[in-house]
Length: 165
Image 1 (cartoon, one colour):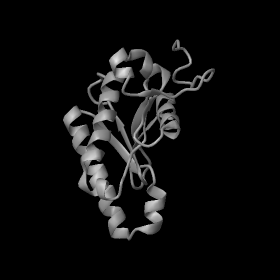
Image 2 (tube, helix red, strand yellow; image 1 turned 30 degrees about the vertical axis):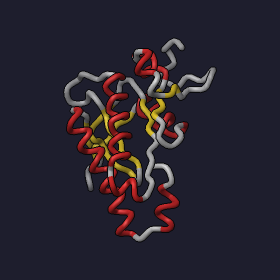
Image 3 (cartoon, one colour; image 1 turned 135 degrees about the horizontal axis):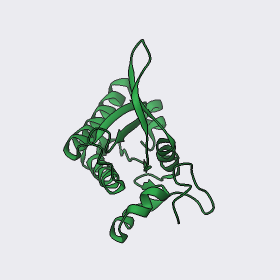
Image 4 (cartoon, one colour; image 1 turned 45 degrees about the vertical axis):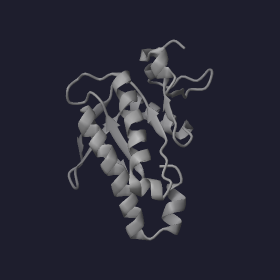
């Protein structure tokens, strides 16, 4: 969420929780609609995956999910009131997922595709969906028009090292 740190510094705790609930509730609804899995939230970050449970992962489905999530935030009243905008990163590839720990169990994911998604989110400006090279390679020209390729010239994340530019 772009500007969340500023919101957290100036808003009452109840307002912060209300905004997070509105935002994450909107994301939950989109995930449910699109058959995606919510993996976890960390602060103002929401981690979701496509294809974990049905094995039908697709870069195109992940981008569609991201675009719908962005639109859901734009429609959410609580988000509009606080001018909440999101930055979204998409990485494509294999992941390892599972429950870890023995106390306060947590479902989590690891892998180069996850690292790529986080790196793409860091490169995104507010309201942008930034994708890695592996995702970009699977998109049509029309789909590419709605996103930004995030890897700078000469850089290849571990997830996308073998993907041609």
